Amino acid sequence: MPLYESVLIARNDVSQAQVESLVETIEALLTEHGGSIQKREFWGLRSLAYRIKKNRKGHYVLLGLDCTPDTLRELERQLGLNEDVLRVLTLRVDEIDENPSPVLARKNDDRGERGGFRGGSKPAGRFESGRGGPRRGGEDREEYRARGEHEDAREAAGAE
Image (cartoon, rainbow, N blue to C red; front, side, top):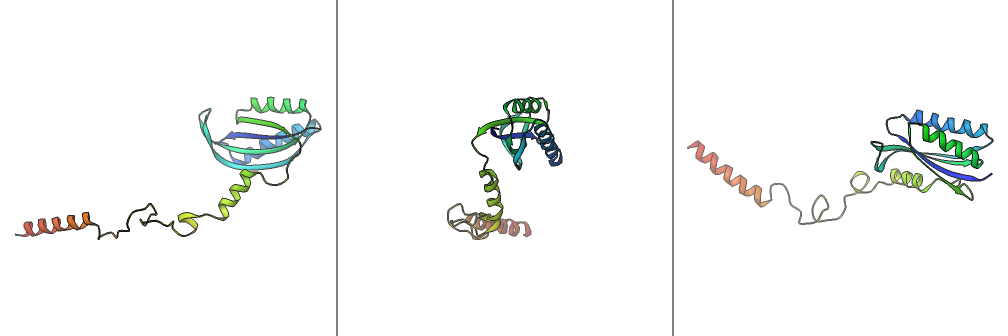
């Protein structure tokens, strides 16, 4: 049987459990027609590039399918009727790669090695924020000194 990779996007207001049950219904349909799911990856809730049906985020799922073209057509028809599914893209592939997809691999790398302010040292730069320019302490800045002088003059005038 031909092999396919399919990515579907579910609405953001459905729970992760509902997305998993959606995948289980897909698996039931495939097994009923002699197919199977060889690979499952839940990419989680991700931002969409543009709004789809008033949604800005969606639950992404990658499935590696082994089924006939007729079964795939029926699967896509049923997913198109499901209101929780925003988009489905299915491609025919020569083989289903068992390694994690690049999206999932990058997501795992980001969690392990966070650079920048959260997990490591601050970036090199001239400001303390790392944006360039000379380092300035809070009270050493000229505008603060000028403000302080004016406030001292007002206090002295008010006391007299």
